[in-house]
Amino acid sequence: MAAQTHLFPCLKDNFGVLIHDPQSGATASIDAPEAAPVEAALQKTGWKLSDILVTHHHADHTQGIGELKNRHKCRVVAPRAESQRIAHVDETVGEGDTVKVGGLQGRIIDTPGHTAGHISYFFPVDKLAFVGDTLFSIGCGRVIEGNPEMMWQSLLKLRALPDDTQFYCGHEYTDANIRFAKTVEPNNKALAARADEVKKLLASGKATIPATIGAEKAANPFLRADDAEVAKSVGLGGSPAWKVFAEIRERKNRF
Image (cartoon, rainbow, N blue to C red; front, top):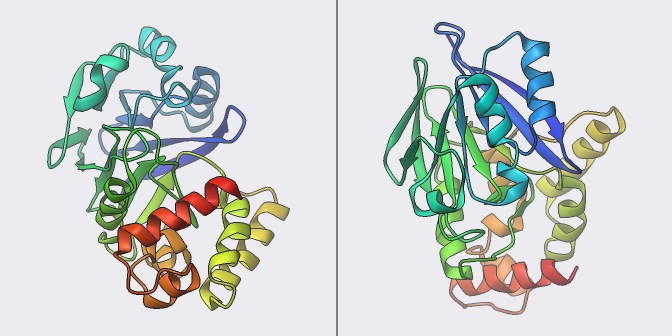
């Protein structure tokens, strides 16, 4: 049976998401921005929390862990490189490791840059990726603990996932990301189409994710830094892709 997901808002603009294995009944929360919305999501779905899969150490992704673990006795899986900065960890993972949620099997992808030890979870059979704050729809995370070259390599790993992979990110930033992306690629038709789609989704009170990797490859400038036209548009024609990415990221920081 296919994995089921349930998306819900947390904090100011965070997303919470549950992934559920209907065969075993196991359910994982991807990060734990705050406990109450996770509890409400569990009540709504009728699912029981068995695991918390942590992408990185930032408080807006981890501050609900203690309360949830105390109540549900769930397993907490966290990035090995950041486990000392995350409370209540039971298991640590890194690049190439696998993690199971009941019968669902995910693969760990190291995606540093936003934080030094950030990881993403990819469930290949179900074509689902949980990417935390590395990739956003039409955007990417700020480069805080890593450097632009590191972040670009992380984005390349995610870009290489199958086009029909649905990804879930940590924040609802899509509308603002689109406004910026248009300054880089004003004539990108895929971006214009995504802008129309997002406008309709938000107007009807719906989330703008999940999105697909294939759609992002066509419209997200942060995944397109190795495109000659994108490089030219930021005045860096012929430069290495990571330098083009760094320029786009710096422009977004100031936007």
